[in-house]
Length: 179
Ligand SMILES: Nc1nc2c(ncn2[C@@H]2O[C@H](COP(=O)(O)OP(=O)(O)OP(=O)(O)O)[C@@H](O)[C@H]2O)c(=O)[nH]1
Ligand SMILES: [Mg+2]
Image (cartoon, rainbow, N blue to C red; front, side, top):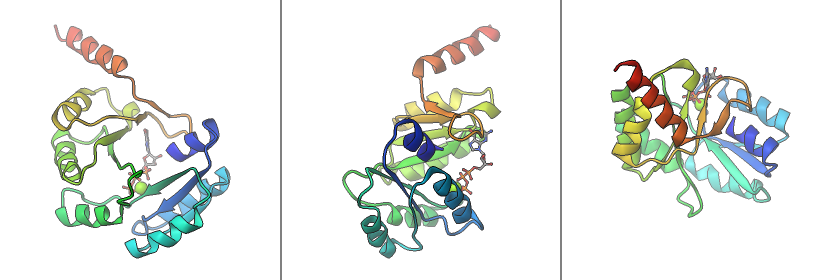
């Protein structure tokens, strides 16, 4: 969704890399999007293949890399995915969490990634809940900045920049309702 927004609305020369060779058909799904968007896609099975992918995509302005969803409460998976993420200076890591998760689980996963220097958080499924307190708590506890939120399944429309004023309104509305 982010790739579609950057490629279509912002007209950036985007390239995709996926390391999600774990979930069946994850590559096929991304390849379908890549074809529709006319964006090149490279698949990497291990960290050693990254250099080849970068080389092939060197003409692109911006590369977006996806990694597999795992049980990231488990330290082993966290260190594994971290070894895949480029240590390149310009690389930005974004943790993606769904707002439908329980807060304590989101906290645990956040803590795992903060240890590896992740400081940005993208929240999905804002349309599937009316509880937004977790956003405030995660930002307060971990100092995350939130570049984007998603609020539906329509690609690329259901993604937008996060608006802190909107969150403040929502939280205060909720507080009034309980007053
Ligand atoms: N309603 C709603 N559905 C969403 C949103 N974001 C993603 N989805 C849906 O959630 C499902 C999973 O999305 P993916 O992008 O595959 O999630 P993922 O985190 O990459 O999954 P893994 O790689 O397996 O961890 C898809 O059916 C998406 O359409 C959202 O903001 N709102
Ligand atoms: Mg995925």
